[in-house]
Amino acid sequence: MKQEDLLHFRSLLHNQLNELLHKADNTLADLIDTSEHPTEMIDLAHMEMNRGFTLRIREREMRLIEKIIIALENIENGSFGICEACGEEIALQRLEARPVTTYCIACKKEMEALEQSRGPQRASGFGMPGVRRADYSALRAQSEEN
Ligand SMILES: [Zn+2]
Figure (cartoon, rainbow, N blue to C red):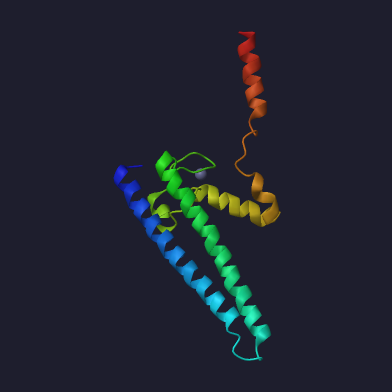
């Protein structure tokens, strides 16, 4: 990837991170506010429900924050924009829409198809090496003969 593209994505990710951290602050402030000022006896259950909702949003934001930090690390170590599964460069358009992605569109689609056919718990082994082990030992056997 070109240096100017890397710089572009780095500032994009930095902005997104700042925004999320700011929002996380507000969410936390809201949370403290509602729990410290239960204005009336009514609606306690409703308030609990809202707090649960707020916490879920926060959890999702936290996951995104982690992804952004990983993407920023990848920019530093030179692996940003490289698909984790096939090692090909991820299209700039895709990165523009989703800079935290670590898979190219083809691999992502393949993973989604796998998830749909096997269920979400079974898809974690995708992209693991070892599929070609049989080929490798055949090659090694060949070279030992020579
Ligand atoms: Zn790929």
